[in-house]
Image (cartoon, rainbow, N blue to C red; front, side, top):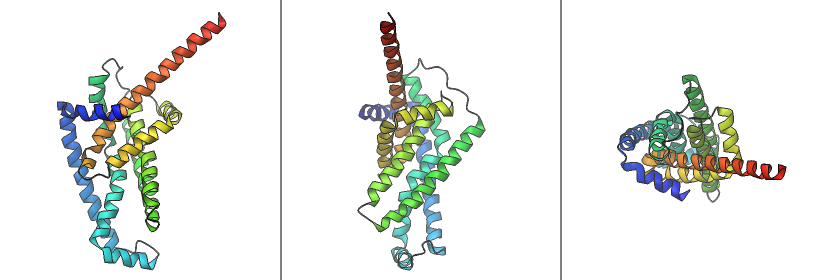
Length: 236
């Protein structure tokens, strides 16, 4: 995993990645500002919580509460909304490191939109539910990182895998390597919470996941060849 992230960071000077990185930063900034305004309006104009003292605490905290909740929701929103754009990042990484790969399959517009919308709804729902654990401060960081690590790992993996596999095959591959995907997802989720680094995290995370997916595929191909060889020996 460390090697995958190192390669991803090393390619940030690639002209193709630099252009995409600038666009990604602008999109991430726009999302953060829009989310900040939306959360601020929500907290000041509506009664968000049924628990009276918690509403009072939000009123007292004011702007700080807006910043905290915006920061916590940012990883989910930015990851779910820039998926279409990040496909070009995956293409740039493949062109440099895996030029022998076949051309990616054509994904229908409906497939892309439906997949992106589903991720956005699920990630927002889960992260809003996770906010309840703010009432248990010692537990909250672990729940937050675990939930986002799972969801972000799943999203970034399928973003890359779906370039060449149909959804059913991509999902089966992810489930077979769920532990590795989860760890990578946690790493990306943590990057998305670090100030300024979180603006670069979608590009770095996508590039790293390309290396992870290709390593998984190579391992799977090697295992299949090994298994085939063993079967031939046994038959002989």
